[in-house]
Length: 427
Image (cartoon, rainbow, N blue to C red; front, side, top):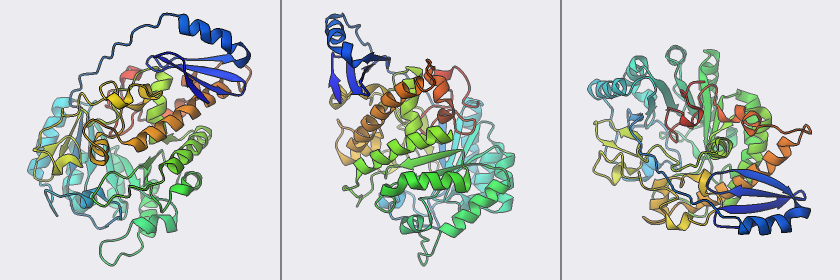
């Protein structure tokens, strides 16, 4: 049970305990429920410090290179093909790639390069050029069907983190992820690609998109894929908006499954993006203003060299809009004012909020998920601290869950310079 105490404080009741969370400082306190009536009166009468938001002034730190808009697959939920495309079937050339490398050089080794498509391995020469020449943190997003031994060796030698799309086991994956020609089975090719990359000692993460084809099985999928592939990280993503998007997606089932995955990931010591980036503010007591680097710190470069702040927003912008969502944060959105999860949320995906709702709103799916996870966090922190009959610091309890194989950021959602940990994104 949850109840509001003051403007800042919210209480959760469980296990004969009352947990009190300061929504802004993210401090957590636990009290015996038998003492709660007296303590609550004291808290209500106690003067509350004013919360003065300090929206960070972001600067460019991430460049996402969409090296092609072509793909050998046609996934049922693809937002790239589900939205108006400015550049269809386009391939980036070396001149555009060199301009990206020049900008990355200016940003320094703390910058992040994300190489995507379409399917970036279809433009292998430019992809290789970027990953070989960039001297910063590098991530490649791929559907995994085109990975060869030669490619895998290069990815290992360039210390590239490889994120492979895999929506579950054979039947779940193939339900949504099919080849564009003939619609054939992709799972076996993805499985082969992951195995090749693992054998080459590449750093591998898996990225799933939740839909009706897998949402009720996400926790079971997680458990099986951890055993099968032992990836450094997982992403369990909501579908981004596209024309014809499923507006009846069972988001509460998704939230329930993520809560189960939180417990499983804690036991396994595995990074799960959608869990970690909401848990980290609570662990570090750092109010989260933005949930995406598109809010001022990311530049997306399309094959022609045209730019935007968001891979989806390109169809609706005039380019060079890296700061248009800088002020879009829970402290400036009226509907977020009274939310108990305001400090760990960051407002969710701005693009989805704008697309599913309107300019002054947020993606309500994110609200449901974040509140569900916050309650799970609050309960688990209490139980974990008392597991061995002594106090434990929460940074020790959850340290393995907050780092993906040495990278201490949520790729695409946090800036590479990890200010919360006062150091580099590499750990």
